[in-house]
Length: 532
Image (cartoon, rainbow, N blue to C red; front, side, top):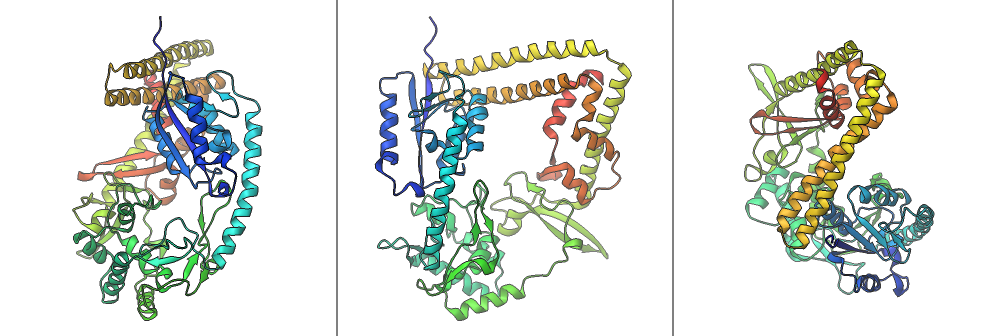
C-alpha cells in the first residue's frame, strides 16, 4: 500500500481598497472561514501559512503576501494554493492564466478555487476559466475608474490618501487623511536641511547619520510597526544613502504643502512619474517641518550644485550594466588624471557613498573591464563559428538527426519523470519526519533547478525537431546576430546594449558576464559538445 500524499497548503486571501464598501461576503474573515470549512476533516491538507493581502488590487500581482507565497512555492514549502474564488486570486486575465496554466503546473502546485469548483488535480483545465477571468478583469476596470476619480477628488481637496506618510510625518489618529508631525523624525529632517545649508554634501550627511546609528526612513518605519516597503530600495540596504538625503531635500511636503499625484498607473502597467506641472499640490494642508526661508535656501543650493553633464561624452559604454557582485548596488565611475593622462575606474556605489563598513571597493579600471568583456565575447562568437563549420563538415543524414532527437526526447522525458518522483518522495519523507525541514528545502530546491534545466533541454529538442536539420539551428536569431557581428575589434555602447544583460564585478577584478542569450548559449554548447 502506497504512502499517503500530503499537500502543504497556502491559504491565499485578498481584499482590495475598491472592495472596502462591499458586503461581508468578501471580507477577510469570511474568506478565512470559508477556506477553513473546506479543509475541515481533510487530513491530506496541512496548512503551511495564510497569506493575506489587505488593501491590494487584483489587477496586478505586485502584492506583498502574494510574492511571499510565490517565494515559498519556489523554496518547496508549498505545493497547494487555496482561494475562496478566482477573483480573490487575481482579476488580470493574462497574468492569472500564466500562473494557473504554467507556473503552478511547472512547480507541481495544486490550485483550488472553492466557489468556482476548480481543483487542478481532479479535472482538466476549465474551458470557462478564461471567460471568468475576462469578466473579473472588466469588473476591475470599471471599479478602477471609479476609485481613481474618487481618489483624485480627495487629492485636490488636500486630503492625504497614501498608504504611508513621508518620513517626518504620521497619519492623524483622528483623521487618516490628515498628517501630523512625528517629532523624532522631524528633528532628523531639520538637521539634514541645516547640515546641507552649512555646506555639507549629501554623501557626508548620510555618513554622519549612519555613524551615529540613526535609523534610515525604511528601517524607522519598520521599528514603529509599519508594514512599509520601499520599492526603490535594495533588500540589503538598511542605512542612509545619497539618494535618501536627496529625496528629503527635494520633498515639498516638509513646508506644509500636500504633494500627490506624482505618478500615474494604467491597468497592468507600472506606475510612471508624470511631469512636475501635472502633480496635485495643495498648499498649507498640514504643519510645516521646514520654514519657507530654509526651504528656498536648500533649493537654490540644489540647483547650483547640479552639474549640466554632456551625456554624449560623459556616459560610459557600461552605464546601467555594472553591479557590485556582493551588495548588488550599481558601480560608480571615477576619473583620475595622472601625468596628463585620464584613467577611468569603477567602484561599488555603496562603498563610495557609505564607506567600508557596508561594502568594499570592488575597484576595476575601464581598460581592464573592456579587455575582459571583449575577449570573452569574441571567444563566444568564435566557438559558435567553429561549431558551425564542424557540424556542416560532418554532413549528418536527416534520418540520423530524427532518430537522435527521438532518442534524446525519450531519455530526457524519463529523467524529468525521475526528478519529479524524487521531489514528491522527499516531501513525503519530510511529512513522515524522516528528514528535517532544512534538508527538505535543500533537496527540493535542487530538484527544481534540475527540472528547469531538463525542461529547457526539451524545449530545445522541440525546436530542433521542427527545423529538421542541425544546420538550421544556426538560423536562430541570437546565433545569427552573433555570427553576423563577427570578431569585435572594439566595444561600443550599441554592442553592449545588444549583447549584455548584466556585468557583476567582484573583488580582485573578477567579473561575471550575463549575456542576453546566456541560457540558450549554455544549452547549445552542451548539446553539440560531441561535434567539437
